[in-house]
Image (cartoon, rainbow, N blue to C red; front, side, top):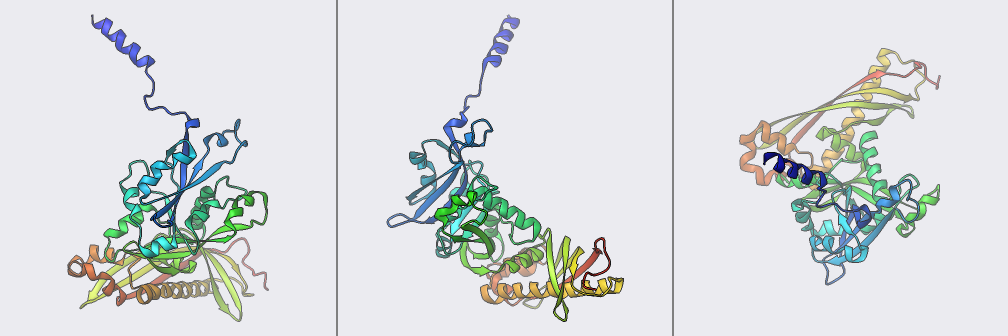
Length: 390
């Protein structure tokens, strides 16, 4: 009897299949989403970019456009995301989201209730990039392609990845980072700003042109408080932000030597330490940044002796400290919001001081005393110790 039941179980297992199996030809993978202000009476306009799976198959690809855009208007993004298939005709899968683009208008007005849907949703992950499209509709960022990427979201997503890795022009903010900022003292946060140049309606023509008629360009930081846009900072401020947060990977720093000559070093390692204290009601922070680098180029005719390299390191430190102080000044005097997470350092190191002033932290941050100390080591000078300027 036992053998009989065992044979039945084995037979059932051997013939069973996936109960929720779906053919690729029946679905679209949503990789990009753009949220704009809707036309009255609608609150939002949602645009999605969907990948056509068959176009990425070597045997079937090349027959149609690799991605499709579709827009709808309504009062909640949750409802719109479910209704998109009335125009696309396939089931939409949101688990492969790479990018969320938000219009400047939406963020300035603070109409960001759609974040509730993205946070609660079980189908979308929270590790995709978030960008603010400056001066134009967010959907226009999803129309820009280039010869190396078949779809617009892939182009911009790869652009952001490289910007973080090579220079530090992207703050590397994901949806999870933005949502977690609501719990920090001051509730300040940043998002990367993007500007669309040219006519985005010709964005698909970029694939056929060596000089693209339109482009999406990284253009600095959007400063956020309580999920509302306060304004923008420059790309150089993005790098200073990453230095203060301890998230800078690599960058190149150009500093003056005097006499109209410059030199450039390549930062290959960076470590940031923040010590929080206070004197009376005045918060104090001492930031120490240690960097390893190599010399990329110099316009000086002098030989690269040890003493000369020490001079280069000192000049680089002065340039970096000056850049960081300018960014701090903007955050404290112009926006009066803690985007660097100094409140979290104070919470961990001086919790008794922060607890009673937590709700007023931005007021205290605006008058905080912040000192920045940098240490640059130039470890390599390349294959030649002589300058081409000699």
